[in-house]
Every structure is written in C-alpha cells, then in structure tokens.
Length: 263
Image (cartoon, rainbow, N blue to C red):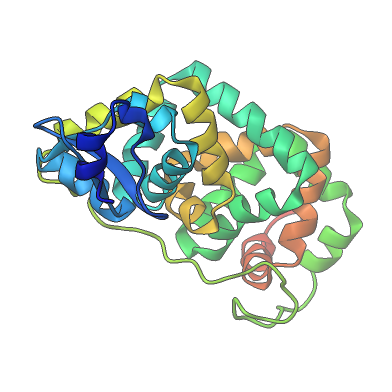
C-alpha cells in the first residue's frame, strides 16, 4: 500500500511504512511519500518536502540510511567539517572519541592516514607536521626500523605494491566547496538540525571514521588536528610509525627529504 493510502486509512501516522531502502518524506501539503535516499535531500532542496526529525527519530533504519547518504556527499561533509572546526568543544570531543576507537581498532587509523600518505601534497604536509612535533621526532629517532629504512635504497613505487597492505588509491576532491544544491539554505537547515542533536552527530562521526572514501575528502581540511591528536598519544604514535613503514610512497618521500639532514 502506498504511503498516501496508508495515511488515508490509518489514524496513526507513525504506522506509515516504506519499502526497504526508501525514506519517508513529508510533502509540503502534509501528505507522505517514500523516496530513495539519494532523492530525499534533493526534494528538500527544491522545496518539495521538509525534513521532520520526529519521523526519522521513530525510524532508526531510515535515519541510518539518511546519514549514510549525507556522509557520502562530499559537499555536505565539507560544510560539516567546517562546523566541527569552528566549535572547539565538538572538535575536542570528536578527536578524543576517534583516538579511543583507534586504540581498539587499528583499521580506523588506516582509514585516516591512508589518504594523507597517498596524496603527494598532503604527504608533504604530513611530513612537515611530523618534523614539527617534538614527541614524534624523538620517537622516530629512537625507532631503529625507521632509521634503517630512511637510509635504505628506495622501495618499489606504486600504491598497490605487495609490501603495503593498506595503500588503496585515493582521489582527492579539488572541486568547489559549495553544497551543490540549488537552495543551500534548506539543506543547511537540515544539517544544523542534525548538528545540534548530540546523538545523531555522534553516529555521523562514527560513519565518517569507518569510511576510507570519506576520510580522503576530509584529510586536507582536518589534517593538523587529526595528526596532532594521534602524535600526542604514545601508543598511537608507535602505531602510526609502523603503518607508515609499510607505505612505499611515503617512505620514498622521507628518504628524499632526509638526505640532507642529520638523519
């Protein structure tokens, strides 16, 4: 039964359902409709319907699909990252949470460091950040495998080298940071409503760190606070060094940059 017929025949609107994979959207005239996640935000942007937190809060599966769709939208996430950077408390809480997760699941650190180490420009910024971090610099000097590798002949190039198990090819987004919607105000209203909901913000941040493709898009915006948080922690600092030792492109860059230094 279509959502419109359900709405006509049922006294309780909370009982309206959509087929799997679709989101329930309330149109401007108050009637419900079911749409694909990729269409949901477009229709809101065009003024066809409105985001209703009460609808989504009672339908966790739909809320999760909406968040997944938003995290995969690089324009929206660019704005989300900017909001994070402008809010020191949110930024600190997010970094602390990510640090805790990286200690439990090393895959999260791979998702974060992979895009940085794989992009030539970000890689150079990453190297400079490591040199400026006194604890990291000392850890590198005391790490025998790192020092041996720095003076070793260049490793085989190529992101898919068998010597690196976590070096997928990442494409950095260099397009305009606009949201890509015709009426960004409506979409920003949705973003801000989700932002002020601490529970939803937390879940979106969980999706971010689990998505390597998303992390590749946020690396440039948030590289410094992410790297500082990792390098400030002794255990994660050691884990970071071990991961970078497996990355041929990164280590070759270090060898080039270190040839005229005390290393």
